[in-house]
Image 1 (tube, protein in one colour):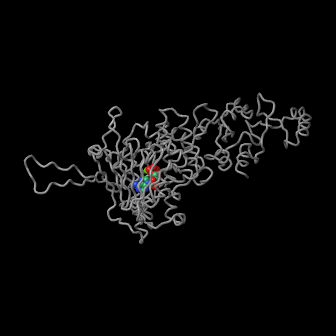
Image 2 (cartoon, protein in one colour):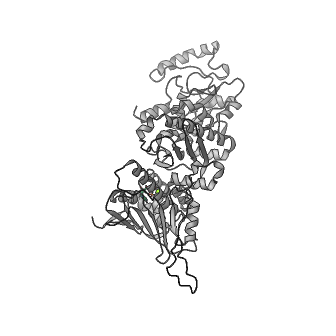
Image 3 (cartoon, protein in one colour):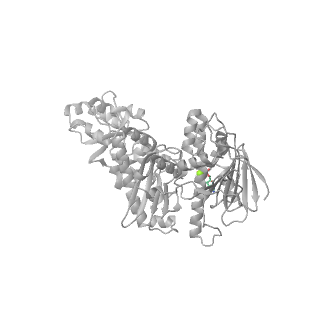
Length: 564
Ligand code: ADP
Ligand code: MG
């Protein structure tokens, strides 16, 4: 095929535009992105080489190389990894395939400059970050096992050019024609070896593959004419240590944060790091991160797990869904299991006893870590809850074994405070001596619940009520009967026994109102099953209640929306 000019997909163009105009202040991070991609490509090739004996590719010396050229003002990054086919280049580099792009676009449209940076941080820009520092980017790649390579070039202006290349080496080479060094924005000179060494050390030290660079050509000493000119020496810039095999006190926060960003493709720092080393029947190491910020696609189905699975340091797969339940899909990390086959497939994982045991342990550890954060770091806990609380609560529906632990690590809005949600243990300490259940009401929003007549008597008597307004709340309160032995009771259902006299026998009153109740019952018989007197209300004249086993209006809506 000959040279072709393509247009970037609309989302991609928008991201590119942001990069070219480089609102992101941390331009150095382009190098981390490229090294990260190269490392992924090497992981993939090694696995393919180990599991596919027919693959025609050399996996004996997998590495990354940086080639700075000060005269030409270029920086080249190569890897001899898996490479890309022509179609893959068009697919992967010309489009933003990530879910959540539409969401990003919407948010970008309504954001101002200061938050744009933040948004990009949450989304991650990967390969396009090269346009923060380069006027033109050229990518040459050949996929392992294929004979013809592909060249991709763009100046980031909306189009890119694709050519066939007959003699491309196996893997991927990316050459950046660097923009002029800009003192005002303090951009580094990326042809300076000293700068490059520092950046690799800073962002990519843990990368499992050697990142090499030829050192400066040694200057011959004055007046000394050597027979053969001295050769520059190849140096390896990173220490390649696998952070998950180290104990927590051997690794700095910064190293963990950079590793977290590498595997999660996020730009924030982890809120908490969990390191587990299990020995015995099942030997494995795990390094897990609780992110600070929620990714854009948290509520989209495609993003199902942030766990990367390794077997004895060999990368096997990311998105290892069997190692973390969906309600913990925002947990990022690595599990390195000692006794699995490299050929392990998703189907096998699903059945594997070892994987199930690891998962059980990881889940308990994540939940107890959240409890600890809740106990000791209220601000961090609030951050966590705002980002992930809604997803975390899905566990109350799907993970009965851990429901009590999840409740302990959760917080809920309540009538106790307009702004501060409460943990259930705190609710319990505020209960009056004669209160033995936890009252709640569900609805579409706090405002809607608070405006409900059902609350009147509770407010009048100073009894705290949980205000549950997430769609998931509707479902879990029907599933989890109690917290720590205290039943959850809806104030909108059945007969609520408020201080023992609720709707209790009061013969005189009953007789006085009997004719009215009969008349109301007959008149409204199409709409209600019963009309009764209540002490629930203090200001309103009447309210509708469901019987103890009926669906709430919100749940009815939820079922209707899901087509049931
Ligand atoms: P991400 O890494 O988050 O997927 P990027 O924009 O960094 O996003 O890269 C897009 C895709 O392009 C990668 O997922 C990968 O499939 C492909 N890619 C990028 N760089 C390389 C490389 N050096 N070798 C092989 N494939 C690559
Ligand atoms: Mg990437």
